[in-house]
Length: 184
Image (cartoon, rainbow, N blue to C red; front, side, top):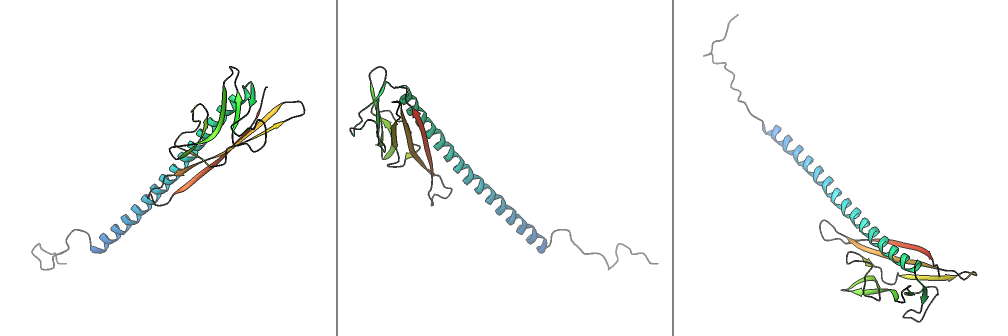
C-alpha cells in the first residue's frame, strides 16, 4: 500500500461552508415559520379585541340595568313621564318618584352623537364607550290583580370591534333585559 504524502496531487480541495441549496431551504423554512407566527399573532389580536368589546358591553349594560332596577324597586311610585304615560306597555321612557319626592325619568338621549341611557338629572347610565341601539330602550309596565306593578326593562347596546387593519368595522351587540317588581 502506498501512503499519500502531503504534497500529493490528489489533495482534497473541498472548502467548508453552505451550498446554495442549503441556504434556499433554510430561507424557505424561515419564511414559512414567520408567516405562521404572524398569522397566529393576528388571530390573537382579533380575538382579544372581540373579547374586550364583549366585556365592555356586558359591564356597561349590567351597570345601567342594575341602576335602573335599584331606583325602580326603591321608588315611592311611578309617575307621569314626558309622553304622559304612567304604566303602559312599549314605553320609551319611565318616570318614578323617589322617597324624598324627587322625580327621575329614564330616557334614551343623544350626547355628542352617541345614543345613551340617561336620566332627567343629566346623569348618563352608559358611557361613550358603547352606544344604545336607537329605539331599543323599552319599558313594559304591567299591573297584577293584587295591584302590584312590575316593569320589564329592555335595551340593546352596541360597540364597534377595533380591527387590526382599520378597514373593516365589525359591530358587536348585546341585549339586556330584566323584570323589576315594584314595592309600591
